[in-house]
Image (cartoon, rainbow, N blue to C red; front, side):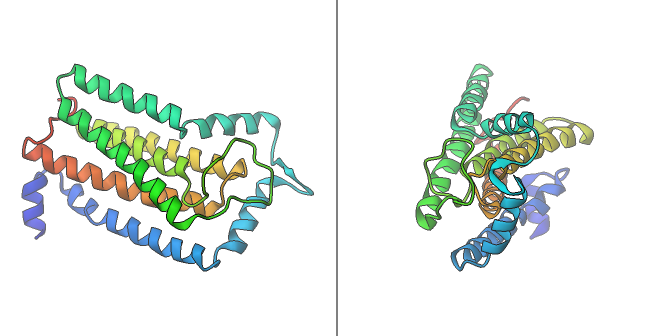
Length: 234
């Protein structure tokens, strides 16, 4: 089976074969986490971690200087609807200019599907937002999973994977993917720091977002091998 998958995806891309198992592992982790959250098994850890990021004796005040709170708001904006919509629209427009409409459509499906998945899970679990601390930014939806964390992971990892695929040097691939992971991590941490999500909300967003991004990436690779999707930049 491994030989067959290797021939389908590409002999020189054996790491993709390993990656085939990662979405399932991430999805399994998300399901286990969701079960623990539903049973209340994460309350103590969530509470302790959330309060650890607030000033002792004053939960209304985030830990650290004022400039750190401002920076965290900047980081959280990187996972906001407006920023991600602009990045996605710019990417799709660029692919259309290159004459690669099917690649642009693949990006649209990956991001749009991620939004639908996040909304469906939020509605299904409907976990309340933390009430231990005042919110340092506007919120309007349910808490689990963190939509900012999930969509940042979906968008940045998907776009980074597309860019990394056409870079020949592994150092360049690593650099691109590392920045995508770092941005996703900063968005998630900022959500907890600002008091709008429990830590397990963010962890769930990362896991299900990674599972979705990896799945979309693998499907795109498979379609490219059959000329169903153009090579993004080549």
